Length: 493
Image 1 (cartoon, rainbow, N blue to C red):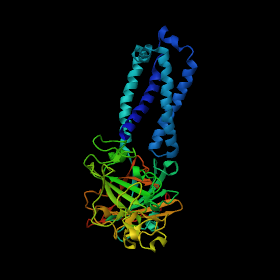
Image 2 (image 1 turned 180 degrees about the vertical axis):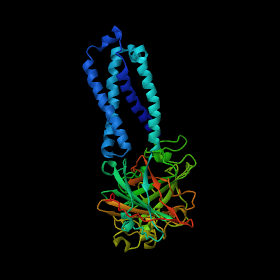
Image 3 (image 1 turned 60 degrees about the horizontal axis):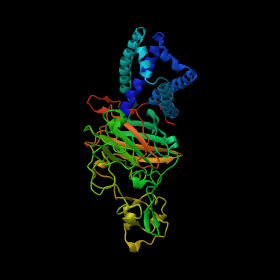
Image 4 (image 1 turned 180 degrees about the horizontal axis):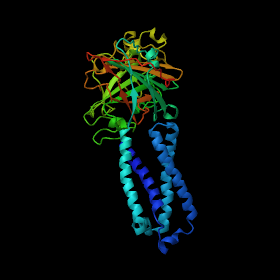
């Protein structure tokens, strides 16, 4: 859809240009008396409708490129949206009167300027311009489908602490870029800007992400004690589109290419694949259908943050629907693990009541962080005779294993901190993990980011990828060494 939208936009802009050139060079067109007669009484109407159309088209062709270049993105997105709606209204206002006026003569009126001898030159010039310019402009847009992020060079001895504090000196020198993301739930206007910095030594890459989120959301489907039993608090989770009782999250997508739509991994609609189940929320699926793997780092403020990790996942081929599963995830795969991580603290989900897997030890609920997660060693297996909690008691739905993710799913270290309306997230990973499910971090690797504000699936997104650029120098022995930059960055506020 993204590719077709860009192609249609390019053709539309060129058609507008070709039309104005055609009108500039064409001679006066002579219509028959039968063609001229219906114009009586409609001149003012057509005049004002055409003026409305000119303003609408101007708004579209100006706001589109500016939105693509992320210049005044919030304002341009609104202008582009309303201009698109206005164009539909203009087409209706402009066309229906002509149909009433001319009837069968309408086709003749449209074609007359193109076939008259004194207009053929303008027509030929317009068509030639349309063909040449549309091809060139589309190639230009496609070739500039990414923004470059330069990584700061570190030596192997530079200390790096993945703690979400960003208080290492080198972060003050790292270049940064800011990406406008939109379309998410709960954010102001559905949008938030994400500022990105990155650094690397010979073995690992380090990323620093910062985005505005006025609320720190640390509730993840908590369990509440009711007269009927334990119930999951939710306002959309049953349809896999929770936007209230959910944690903040952040996702990073990586690919070797910078194609449109997250490198062609986005498939929108209720049922993008005819032979696969429809999704519950109507937003679509993610999948990689060309045999190439796209890496996905999924940081979760409750489920992974206290483990100091991001969930290492990937987009791959379509999964087969398994019997008994309500949710189909298409090409969204979790990397394999040996042990560790988290599980949900219920035996089997039901919108009415659930049975917890484990109950907290008596003193655990007095601890400040008890609402976020339940550690394995601060809990015990559920038994009805131990369930003496009063009505209204809340329990965490996230049950931590005794250790971190180990294995392929545990390759990404991450820690976030929320302060004064901003999340700051530090992430680290080896350049090459050796996993078939991971994308190597190297020159030209493409990256996209998405922020979640207390939402399960309704995340923000952006069009143009961020392409990584690694500076490196090689010594006489061939080893890669990185040199510290000396110019502080002024963009990180």
